[in-house]
Amino acid sequence: MSSFVAVARVEELPPGARLHYAFEEETVIVLNVGGEFFAIADLCTHDGGPLEDGEVCDHQIECPRHGARFDIRSGRVTRLPAADPIPTYRVKVEDGLVYVEEPELW
Ligand code: FES
Image (cartoon, rainbow, N blue to C red; front, side, top):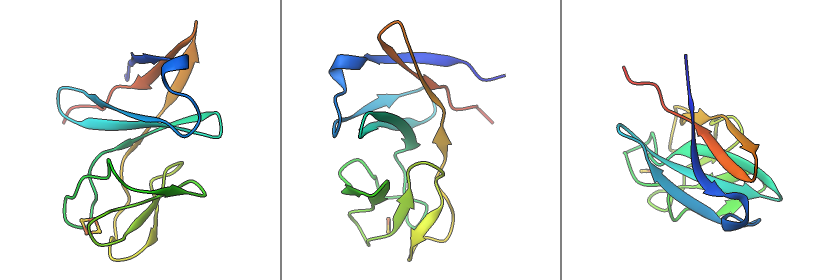
């Protein structure tokens, strides 16, 4: 069963902002896009590049290395060269805090 971890106060993550949160096994990027929060793995499935500096446009993040794009809502690939989706994590806001679902260990 997954658990949620508080990663920031809502005011620390205004629209257009992002942050990194290092869980034990995985670093996650938390993004505020138009007032909605999303969380994705900071790892491109094409060649393992970080997505942290990727440009976000229309709910898609572009990998800075070779230009693959992923939908931050679902993780699905929207542009090659990546073929596999990236993990996404549920986000919730409670009492002014942004919580992210902890990646499951395997
Ligand atoms: S590592 Fe991301 S597109 Fe190649």
